[in-house]
Structure formats: C-alpha cells, structure tokens
Image 1 (spheres, rainbow over the protein chains, first blue to last red):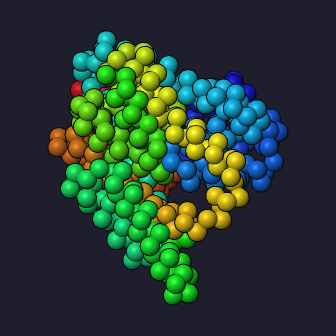
Image 2 (tube, rainbow over the protein chains, first blue to last red; image 1 turned 60 degrees about the vertical axis):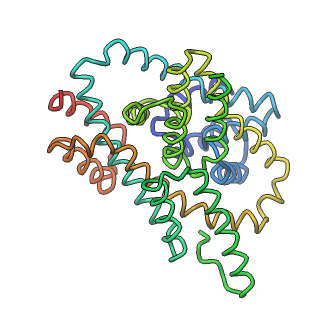
Length: 181
Length: 174
C-alpha cells in the first residue's frame, strides 16, 4: 500500500484532481481494495472536506483497509515524493537560480501557469455558478480577497454562512435549491 | 518559535482549503506573506515549479516554505501541518458517514462554499500573474494566451504546456 501511494504521489503532476482517476483505477481495478460504490463515496467525501484531495483520499482508503496505521502509511506514501522533489528543486535553484536560462524558463512557466489557472477558474465557474446568488458570492469573494486584502478564510466562512441562510430560506418558502449540482 | 508558526499556518490552510489546490493558492499566498515566510516573487516561482513537479500543490508549498524557513525539519513540520486537519476530518467522517451525507446544514454550507471557490481561483490568477502582468512582453503575453487556448480548446496536457513555455522562456526571455 505504501508503494502504491508513493507511486501515485510520484507520477501525478498537476495536483489532486489529476490524481482521482488514477487512485480509482488502483483501488478498484488493480488492488481490489474497495468496490466501485465505496470508491465513489471516498471521492465524494475527499472532495467535500477541506484539505488536499490526495491526502483525504489516502487517509480514507488507508483507514478503510487497516484503520489508523493504514491511514498514516498511505498519507506518508503519497506525500513523500513531493517532499523529496521540492527539497531537491530548492537546492538546485539555490545553485543555478541566477542562470539567465533558468530565470527565462521561470518567466515562461509563470506566464503559462497564470493562463492555466485562469482557465481553471473559468471551468469551475461554469460548473458551479448557476444562479445570481452564486455569481454574487464568487464576485464578492474575488473582490474582497484580491483588492480588499481580506483573508481567504473569512471569505470561505462568510460563504458557508450565506449558503446555510439561503438553503434555510429556500426550504422555508418551499422552493428548491438550484445551486445544488 | 518558527516550527509552531509553520505548523499553525499550514494547519489553517489544510483546515480551510476547500476546492482543491488552485482554490488554496490565495490562502497560501496570504498566510505566507503575513508571516513574511515568502515574497510575492517566490510565491509565483513556487506555483510555477508546482506545475511541473508531482504531488499536491499545497504539499509542495508547505515543503517549499518550510524548507526555506527552517530546513528539513521546517519542511516536515509544515507538511505534517497541512495534512493533520484532513487526517482528523476524514477519519471522523468515516465514522459518521450517514449523518454527514444527509445533513442539510452541510448541504447549505456547500451551496455557499462552491461559488466562493470559483472566486478564490480567480484571485489566484491575479496573485500568480502579478509578476507576469507587471513585466508583460509580447512573448509572455503570447504564452499566456496560447496556454489558455491549448488547454481549453485542444485539451493539451498542462504538463506539456508548462514544459514548452519553459523552453520558450529560456530561449526568448533570458
């Protein structure tokens, strides 16, 4: 199990979302740790809880198989590659960080990363913004964090409160909640 | 006490980090800036590096910030910090699965969190793009636009886009 998660951590570039189909394939098809339904539950929980999705999934699957020790082993496994690689990268950058080609490459990568994040914002926005309520919350969060210097944690807590109030109000009116997926 | 600070900063990111790595970026940026653990320029370097290295971006950030602040043990403390809230919450949910899924309170909270996540990722564009927008050249503007088109329209893998941009950057921006 440690090696399976270590390999996952090592070979998935691009973060948690990219890891989901791979974890699914390993846990259900290759290792037969869980059924398809159990895995869907695992993904739903991992996505809805805060935190790193890969860590959530590793903890969940580890716990499912071997309780607490399983969770610990799987979580260490999935994180260890990042840990080692980032330390190596930092050391390399300290060594050759002022090389003009390295600096040039970083300039190029930063421009591309900005574009990739912009597309990701567009994609998520298209998925979750289905009503005026959603658009207002998203715009408000963007505005206060970017230009108001408001801590992102407060924006999340305020969004939570607004969502709970809206759902209660909708239920009170007997209306349906069109912000649910 | 640098270790305690690192642990708390990243535990907070782990606890409030809804919606995956990109949505966590503003929080990482703000926390690291408040504690002067990382400059805006280092932040964009980190995000750039995270695009080409494996693993979750929050773990990469924790390791990067922790290592620069206090070496191996700093990196370890920060990484454990980001993982601990997940760990506790997932295990709790495994115990109380049924109640968690049927709670209308949870349902309501997520009705609000999802749109905020979209706003968070939009702010990440601004934080990440700061150095790019300030020193915009035809080459970087071209890379930015091209990467959106390639990933959005042609479904090119982000890893390939980032590697290509790195090469173009090394050739034309050095």
